[in-house]
Image (cartoon, rainbow, N blue to C red; front, side, top):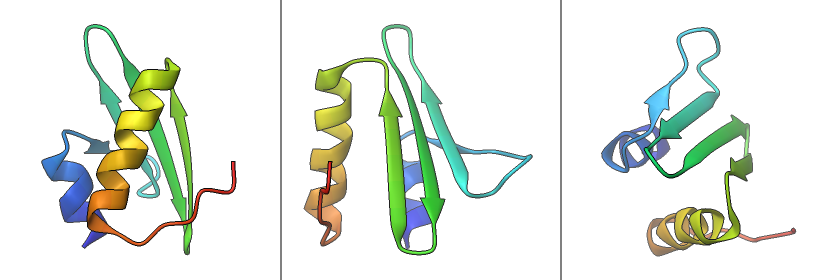
Length: 66
């Protein structure tokens, strides 16, 4: 379910490690690391980070611990 959502959001699954998803656009970069039930998101700026978190919140119940 998460895989399908991330692919629909434009992320690509890493060939080297299937727990890593990336999305590189002209003006932004996002890397998501998924491990069991934890997700770490790294983004090129705060607005992109908030956008990704908002998208995830719209589909899944998540808890942001900073």
